[in-house]
Image (cartoon, rainbow, N blue to C red; front, side, top):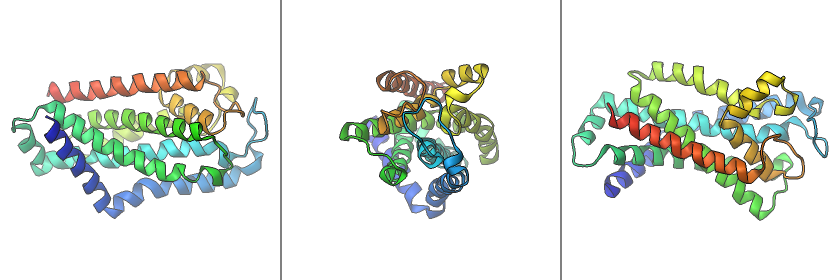
Length: 253
């Protein structure tokens, strides 16, 4: 099982990075979105409860990180549909390797792709106005990794059930983009109406955005969610649950 999972893991990495169109499509749109929207709103943005003024480029940084992971997970998990159409997936499923190894290999590879893409953007945190401690860098990277795993596992489960890339994109746009928008990525939880704050607190992606914000700028009180440690625990539970769900979906079909 370990060998099969490792082989699929390596294949996902190579397959993604050999396709420059997918790499550019995953990372450039969120960065352009961050720069244009952040520059447009600029200093007109006001963050309730912050210890110091925060411009929108700084606030939107964590949301852009999660958007990069989201785009990357979409592009990476499309390989499930392509492998089924090309017959590769059927060939893998009839070999002695278990379906769990297929899930671990493909989800692990796509998670690594999303994490590496996000990590490359995280390196520019200082340019966005952040001055995190060494522990803050590690905590932000950990939150990014857990978020990547959870989103990729969810993308894998949706892709496993999808019959076409068009249907997959429709479901992802209908389901995951609204979750991202209601995660505190674009507007803060504190300024939202009461009913929307409830939705944002239920949304697991909120804890990814909040954990990254708190890790990079703990003194600013950006997130309005539980403390960093609690957010990381919630992210870990979410990622484990979604990975188990992806394994269940693959095992029952």
